[in-house]
Length: 372
Image 1 (cartoon, helix red, strand yellow):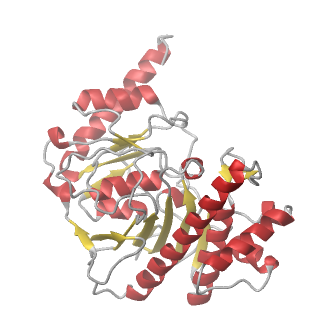
Image 2 (tube, rainbow, N blue to C red):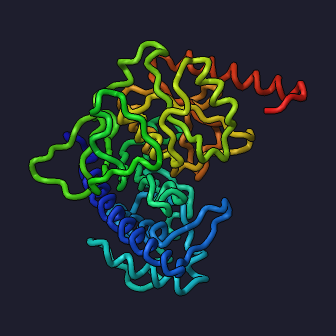
Image 3 (tube, rainbow, N blue to C red):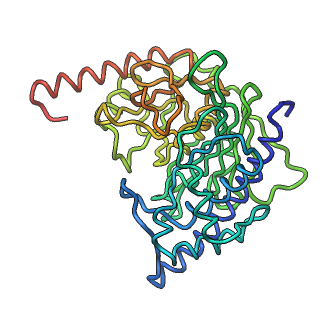
């Protein structure tokens, strides 16, 4: 790939593979410990479990990137507060970090220190990452992803833009999207070969996918065609959503939108947002809508930054459900937007009209005293 960002991309790809190795190691140990009822975990404020892998991967990413690019900002999901108060868990994190190659912590305090490099909001050029997106499914041996993104200031504007995206999906089949468009996946669609997928892009240079593990010299990265550009009517829409594990979204709106557009629902059904963006990029789906239950609910930057670029690079358009562009301002939340709407650019306006119509109907039902 001919790009000034080749160094950043190459480093991020190597880190994605090392992080995936950590996740696979921890997952094997977790299942073994589960059988013996010896599982250590803590709980975050949103009640999702945090695993050894979350902390170890964030330490690997933050430690390596801070040394390689000392002037860059870092934003990550985890804080080391829980680790500092749980010596046994900290020992487990430090131990599993030894699986990775290329970066070593000086001691356990160093592990906590590099994790906490990511507690800020990020200014200027910033790396954003989610060490494990889909922790709940990860702990069940189902789909999860490791998200690494690089953002940079947009010239003449206060917001930032995505310039590099690398996503590791250790349980996703890297050949997805080559089956003629008939595939439909969910969190249980696990790659039986064990090779997984890494999908990546530099802005303006297209999207590529290759095996995450056991890549041979003969296997070349596969470039994903700009498939979303080929969709000109709503008949070509394919849904990606989160249905079985619906929590923060409004189910009636999402189902109503699909009905208005004649789209199969739920279609591709994935818990993790990063996996949903990957599904859209690969062409397994091409449309996703997400309306939060409350207006004050804001998305977290590490669930979307970078991964959204993958879909844009194949011809997709992404806004919020009010039709506004997604703003990656400095901060940890996407606080200038409400929800998400991603669709092929040619029909994005039609999908937006359906979404806003469904939202109005919901409000009218609520005002009339009906059930939602």
